Amino acid sequence: MAIALAAYPALRVDRLRPLVALEGLVAVLPLAAGLVLRSAGPLPWALFFLGVEYATSLLLGGRTVDAFAPIVGAGFLCLAEVAGWAAEAGIVPDERDLAIRRIVTTSLATVVAGGTGALLLASSEFAFTGGVLLETLGVLAAVVSLGLVGTLAWRRAEPPDPFA
Amino acid sequence: MTRSFDPKLGVYAGLAAFGLLAALALGLPELVALAAPLALVAAFDLLLTERPRLEISFELDRPTALEGERVTAVLRLAARTPVERLEVLLDVPPGLVAVEGDNPVALRLTAREERELTRILACERWGGYTLGRAHLRATSRFGLVRHELKIEPSVELKVYPTADAVRTLVRPRETQVFSGNQVAREKGEGIEFADLRPFLAGDRVRRINWRASARRGQLWVNESHAERNADVIIFLDSFTEARRGGSGTLDLAVKAATVICDAYLREKDRVGLISFGGVLNWLLPGSGLTQLYRIVDSLLDTEIILNYAWKDIDVLPRRTLPPQALVLALTPFLDERSSTALLDLRARGFDVAIVEVSPLPFAAPGAGEEEELAYRIWRLRRDALRGRFERAGVPVAVWTSGAPLAAPLEEVRAFRRFAARGRG
Image (cartoon, rainbow over all chains, first blue to last red; front, side, top):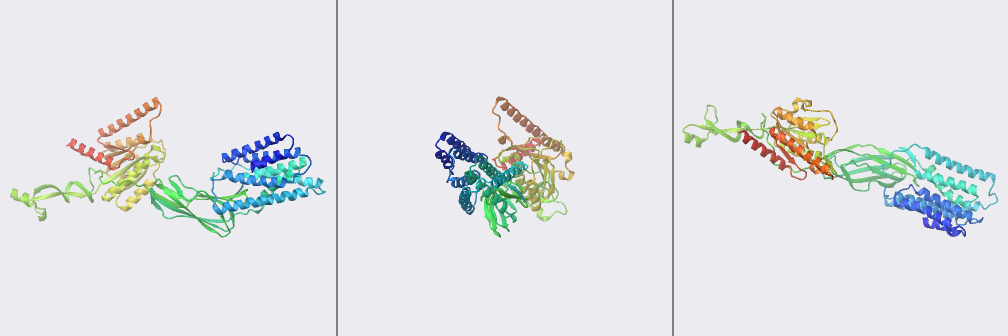
């Protein structure tokens, strides 16, 4: 899935394809390292570089909206969930019914993510695109997210994980 | 129960924020489709996760076990609210090993569901354990929010040491006044023949030795040795030990002490215990099954506690060392304080015998020439110490891990027989 997500932006651009492909490679390497080392540490970097690669391909691809963006978004979420799951696999084994439930939950979340992405993308096609109010709302959402990250980053160090 | 957030929440929120900002800055609505699912998942988990309510109990199938046996531990969980994912880690103390059942394990509980997690624990080392400490972590649907709970230990398990039984024991030189299975050196009422003497008024007729009387022309009677009990003090050196992997000299000494105490108590002797180490521990001599349990329970608490304070036998209460008692020491000869105390006991007239629990299998010589030289010097010093005890009339028998305990005990007996003949 990571390879597909990394290959898609490289395939959709006509110019500077090696540069985009290199970004994809940079994204896949930490993911592979995280999975091999069973560590969730490098996974955010993989997701970050995949996002950067996709953004680069969008910038190079012209002004047409990418219709496959909801699928990319869904795949992005699915990859984050599955990679996180794979990195922690073996530390605390799941019971069978719990593992099945997790697969179902991840699948449903992927589908919902695709649907939400499609809805958002469709809404961006309407006339009110780019309004000051909407942009302010977007900035506000981003600031709230950043605030959440900041709060989490400033939390005091927790004791060692007994499950690790 | 403490609430915390998984690092994944920071990642999701960070990526979502970055994606949304980038979408705004670059004018790329596709990035919103990329970032929005992450933000939605984070919001979903933060808003819909409720504090789990759990009732937990822990029990063992029995409170005591022998080394090598297995006990069944059951952790009962009852959920009042649904728990999407509950990770359960039962803390197994060193010396016990979980052999069956996943530990840790993740499971799901619905509202009002009760579950029993059964774990089979192998008792690999003797000792007293407190079981029941468990870490529980309830995580939300996407694992972004977690509630943690720590259960404190509640159930005690005593694992008794096992070792080969011994048939022959070291006999004390002197016996006590109570009846027992030891043949006393004094003459008295008993069944063991001691001597002949002329008949005196008041002697029982059944004691007359008719054959000797017929030969000598007057009445002669048999004299016999009395059957008495003895006092035995087990002197356990717990100053320090040599250990490698899961075994060490203290383990061997405790096993030997258990077997020896059991054997002496079966012979109706009174047995006491002195654990001479960083922490001094003693039991006054006593007899019977109750005393065996007392001793074994006391042995289970034996551990090496480092202490640099000088200690000699003056710190021992007088009653722990009754006169004419046999002091049977189990020591690895690794601390000068215990060997000095034993020599001191001998100098004060106690009947001392030593089983040296050899530390050599647990202390290999080093690789270099200097390390080998140091090892040889150390062994020579041990030999010299052994010679010092033997010159003081104290038998020292070396017991190596893997050898039967009867071998050093027989060696001590042989030394004492030889020493008695030498004195005669």
